[in-house]
Picture 1: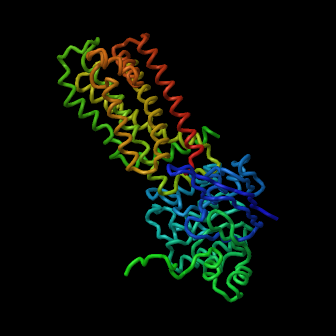
Picture 2: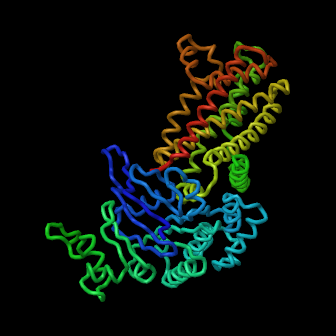
Picture 3: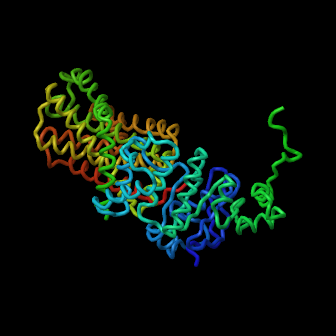
Amino acid sequence: MAIISTAGLARTFATKRGPVEAVRGIDLTVREGEILGFLGPNGAGKTTTLRMLTTLLAPTGGAATVAGHDLATDPAGVRAACGYVAQSGGVDTQITAREELVTQGRLYRLSRARAVERADELARDLDLTGLLDRKCGALSGGQRRRLDIAMALTHRPKVLFLDEPTTGLDPGSRAGLWDLVRRLRDEHGTTVFLTTHYLDEADALSDRLVVVDDGVVVAEGTPAALKLEYGGSPDASLQDTFLAVTGRSAAPAADAAPVAV
Amino acid sequence: MLLHDTGLIYGRYLRQSLRSRFALLFGVLMPLLYLLFFGPLLTDLPLGGRGSSWQVLVPGLLLQLGLFGASFAGFSIIIENSQGVVERMRVTPVSRLALLLGRVLRDATVFAFQAVLLVLAALVMGLRAPLPGVLIGFAFVALLTVSLASLSYALAMKVRTPQEFGPTINALTMPSMLLSGLMLPMTLGPVWLDVLSHLMPFRYLVDAVRDAYVGSYATAHMLYGVLVALGFTALAVTVGTRVFRTAGA
């Protein structure tokens, strides 16, 4: 059962130097309850795709449905069904975690009393109790990330989009976040769509990977299948597989000038 | 839903303003300095209007407060954009119009408060004006604030960096202030300057408030002032909402 499906989803930006095709045409399906790793080199179009799927950016081509709602005709339905954590997070550093969580609940149209309750529930669930009355700016990187995710879970979304959720976190916080993502899927059946540059993370966490490059999907499958197909063996590292898929070589190209001598 | 959402956004940003009480008072500093150090120069000058020089100057200072204050409102959204706050709100079902209206109504509240402080200071300096006129003046400040803040937020969503935003606003506000006759009535100047100033929408607002301050409420100035203020507000809020609805790159 596909919870996300896209066909030819594309976005072209008009710039002073002419049109830039950030996303050329993405075709993918995500099954309900799946943890999908969305990989690709910098500039491949990952964030642009995510911003389209979360209604932040209107596609310039193609179509998509998220949790049964058409992106173009029912953006409100899409918003009600999905949560999104951007790379930068999205909390005001000057106010308390509690105030942000309660306001977020109210933005999702919970009553004031219910929003206060929900903030406490989320805090218990994401190990933020005791931190609620701190200013968001005073939280550590890992705590801040959990708060960002709590904000996105306010309305118990069916789909959670995470854009590089563990960038900049220490190993302990990363492991904690992986557990959290797995728990969300196992306990609530939440579908998780995450981008990452950490291939160990993609390997450990994802049921399936979709690799994009230059704004199109260049490979997809389970980590094991991709390793076998592109890396040559099921024991290949995902790193080598990734480089083989995207045609990027770890060794400097012959014509490349040395960066430093 | 629009009311609910607007109230919510308004509350969030009003609390933000109340947390920085210093900034709340600081905004009134520039017009206050004009009042203290520029106002007394006008006392015995023939300004061509009825009433005292204070009844000419204070309306101008009130609109100057709105002009300079509200034009820079967009700075806050540039900071919020870099923190991801705006996008985080835009993925919730919150009304796009409320994201704008809640903010601009907060700004209108803050500037109305500063306008009251300014008028109180002016009363001490020697201003005497009818109460309905003073209240009409506050209404104009609020409308001007709503429209300029809307445009400021729209611009800030488009340009995205303080380096582009600051100089653009400076380049727009200075000529607006000079050409709308906020400091001195444009009728004192040569005809070409007076004609040119009629192209500046704020000119009509300041003329209307000056009439209100001498107790003339049913004048052509008042009619034009109200029409321009309402029209400009409608235009600015429309532009702002469009940007908030489509804001992408």
